[in-house]
Length: 366
Length: 199
Image 1 (tube, chains in turn blue, brown):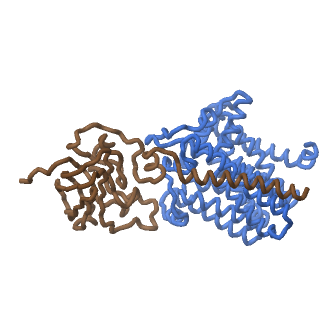
Image 2 (spheres, helix red, strand yellow):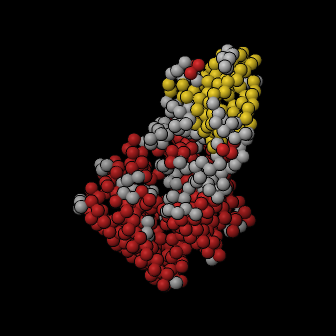
Image 3 (spheres, chains in turn brown, yellow):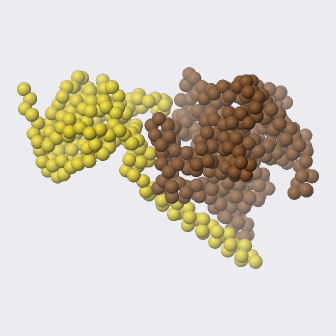
């Protein structure tokens, strides 16, 4: 532990500084919006929309049958278990309400995400790239979710861990990280595809038997988180795919993703912005592929196309919390300093605007 | 040692594969109610736990009312209830269907109050109830229509087949109703016996 601290002391301190700045801005905007400077109240009010579902889930567990929404067809089965479990753990440990514990949990994972991304930057580009990596995370235009009790920061951290392990060819660690990812969000399972792609590129099949057996186990571990959740849902409701079927309560159904994209581009409202975000993500995926980061490209493309198949509404959230997208932006910012200045300025302003819209209750931010 | 480094991971893989295979089986064979299956899995009805009301069988189904009478188990391929009734809706299935909770046999009278969309006017509407079939053309302003059917085997499912000319435009996946709704149903009555003589 001490050796880790010695190795990454600078990153830890920087991550703490970035988290402090981002949190301070978030709570100042909350205080100005509500004219209430209490931190507890600010944390409580930050927890809305999906965080409200997570809070109920952390407190009461999964519903035994659909009962929510006006039609009575909603249940919290759409929300994956790992993040609310950790929120519940924090809530129980410190005796605080889940609505406060969840934003704190997501903040903790923001710190870990910043740290992990700095370690990635140091690995690829040396010490000089570390501050930029921290800034890209802290001034992410959609950083609001890391303060509001959403699972995005935890998902980002686990993805960063998985890629760090992947680049070090630690297959079992990738498999374990993927198992945790698949218990956090459905698209986390796509890390298994990135793992398979890396193994094929590494010609794992031509290695010795123990290496092959380990690789096979790593692949088999990936879906474990999702599988345990499905088994629980089967025990609870009789439907192992209930997390998917319940999406009907949010009027989401499977469609061809590119048609959703075209429809978004033709939309006169927010749809066009959401579609442009999805397109930007796909462009970055292609660029990553061309630069030799095929696993990151594959993961990014899959994790954008899968949610795109069910609708376009939350695309910016899905995009700006994808590790390969931020990794790609970092590569571009290092290459083009002007882009770096424009992106960070726009990201900071966008992030501040999102803080305000979040507190003011504009639902398009979800 | 090398053997253990092969056998231990492979044993874990075998255990995980068994678990995933069982999960795949139960995922494909959910143990759920018929209503859950229709609404959440097959997506053939917009009604989750519809309201139930009690009326005599010969008053039939009033589709302008929310919910269903208690002699109807469920419908498929029909939209939500609106002021003019329910529409056949391809989003919920290609063959609109009304499933009754009781069987009918022998002579039955089917009475319909329907209103077609402009694209359906003049096209045939085929109705099947058990082994009895009828066909008629959709007039622009349909009034009540009565059909005497002879059902030889017990039947409880009424299928309505219409010619669906238009499809939802491929570039409009969000279009709610474009080209999807064809025939409006205001009232459907099935009751035992012959239909009353028309004046």
